[in-house]
Length: 577
Image (cartoon, rainbow, N blue to C red; front, side, top):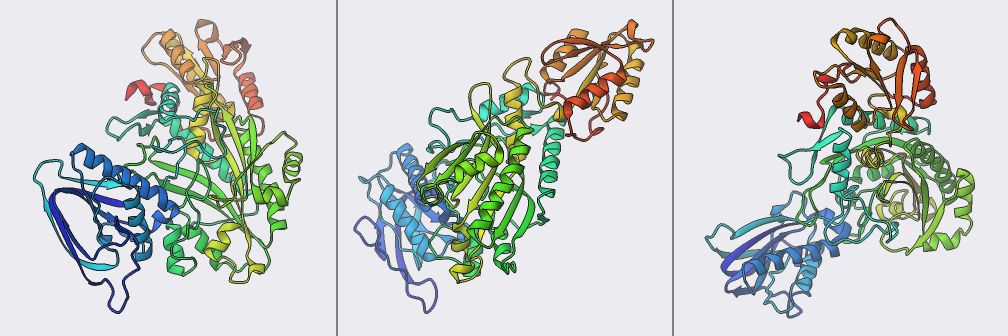
């Protein structure tokens, strides 16, 4: 929704004719007197010129409430008692139809301060209007309001906790996320950005790339075909396909980390609507990319862009979907465990839990691990079952990594599978590690919890750091780093012209798991004195033995070698920018 709040000396309007020739104007039952007048005038006021997006249907009541709060706040700041509402669909690229717009304006009017005089022009008419705008600098304000969906670690103003998050568990904030990323030299706030939006430093970008590739590899083994679908608002896509009721939500308001975001998955659902199901599963893997919207009712985001490798499947019936959910639960469990996930929660809609009382035991048995099970009301969500894997940071905050969802509602709302209820498929959605930026933040928060906490060794941007005591020791460090890199170990050399202590401090801040100081004793090829960050012990190891130990610590997991420079002075850090 877009608002133009105008401080005016006066407002007058008249409905001249229906907006579309031959069309009847929508029935109006709103306004302070129970019916939107076809004409009206008012003295000094704040005029709310309002345009409704199709996507606002995802959470129309919340959008209207937030819009009313914004208009009330503008009027209060200007000490104005009256607010007038004028519909103006031209302010948005993809306006909602007249019925949705009328519902939204009615809801805004209902939520404005009841003591105000609130004339409202009708929707669906060509209006002759006159707004006598005042001339002061604050007389006109453009305001963007979006559905209350969340994009990871930020909490929109006025929203409560996530439905599947315990009230006793604090939510991670943008501030704590940025602090953790900065502490490890992964990212730093950009002073030119709105709020705490970060710029990614080389080590952080390496970690993002490695996580994306790891999740994509996990999905490559699921039998899903790669696909790329356009980013289309689901409600706009449904309207264009005539696949849904004009005013009903398809996905609904999003909670933390849910996979289907209301504003982006129209292309995906359109793909499934066109797929030839024929009783066989259709499986696709897609790396979704999206930008975070800026709006008055949402605080500035830490991450302006996000990436999430996802899996989506259409199954012919509920039984097949349950089997698929169990299979993908194993994929997400393994991927999340590699990042340190320490708990799993299965959230079931009440109706699904009643119909399948043994479902929680089945999933726990399949994972061979305890799973906390909780139920929630059926209303307000598209999934019937959701499995989430979480990691707890040093402050006790839970951060969601991988998740799997069983979705029987969206196919019916989007008309996937045709009109025959017997042919309506059930969808399964999965994101093995969640979105890449959220996973990076979760790893950083956990590693920043104490001086001896690490990133998983297989993901550490630098696995071994070599620190020469003097210039004559640099060549020995370079040779050792080259040998380690050839063996598949990410090694670098910190030969900056600062003290050895300062270089060791940087290695500690960056949570480098293995550090070796090289001096005269090591020049002849002798074993290196290698310090292990966790648990803080020191060992004498040859270069070859050090490489073998690092690779053993990584197990069967690996990340690319050679994407970061070998010399530290060529890698910008938080303190360098």
